[in-house]
Length: 421
Image (cartoon, helix red, strand yellow):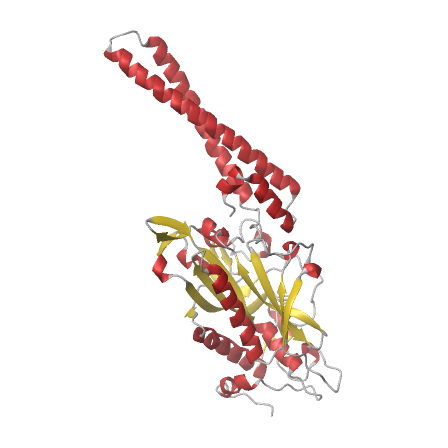
């Protein structure tokens, strides 16, 4: 959530910064009006309280002197009622301001470029050369291996669900284990979390209230299936005060993820690119403000080096303000090369939310007897299904079969995998 004190004390700076994210003008004007009204009401309340204190002191003196206090008492009683009324108005305004601010996105970092949408993102670098084929490469759903059953996925649930089977299921299991091992060697501690969370958790990381339509809700419960393990892992420390010497905390986690994809009608309807249920290995870090930039680079390197170890060409994209996520102050996407589509596709996003989530989730650390908001960071490492697709397309052979990256061979052997030479 935005720093409401900053909003009230320096509205123009916040207003200008949020222009990068193309935040609705009327929403910001409403925030400005609320913040100014609240500031005025608080000042009025303080003046009333000051007057009440002074008159109460005078009332005590008059009583000691056994003088007539009837007129002053009536004035004090009237002022007390006015104080209660204005205090109620202030609380109501505070709640309204907080509710309104909860749907306003995070302020982008200064180095986030201006831009309207994904077409304005900035390519930072390319990693590995794209493969060359002496045949026309196919998309993953047209390859020979009998790994993915789309029809039965629809039969079991609905569209955008699929079933992995045979060596495809074994390869996905191998990928998950390989990713977790890779991340733990980089200093991220593995955790296993619930796939169902409450509203407080989703508010803490910013999915509620703004993005409820994208969530799968449990009927009759105030519970939801997780859209990403960022939600439960970050909220492990909700409403806690951590020790400064324990920071940074760095975690990796595998989970299934569930999204309605409400805003993606008609996009990627074939194949496994955009599913309602998908597997992901996540990176989450909790840091001091001073540590967060360094840890951001470490997380980005971890995800990129993982792709490199798999021999998958990819590129780094710095997201522009118009494509930046709700809670992110800065995001670098990793896009993997898919020969069948002849284009790069997102496979990871690494984001620094600064203290935006921490303020919502009340995650702090103690330093010099002061409680300070932490910084929270998250990143995909990686979307497992898209990694499987990338391997299928980059390692495909002319006959439609698929080779396996060398680093996975020990992992797939344990799964009794039929390794292609």
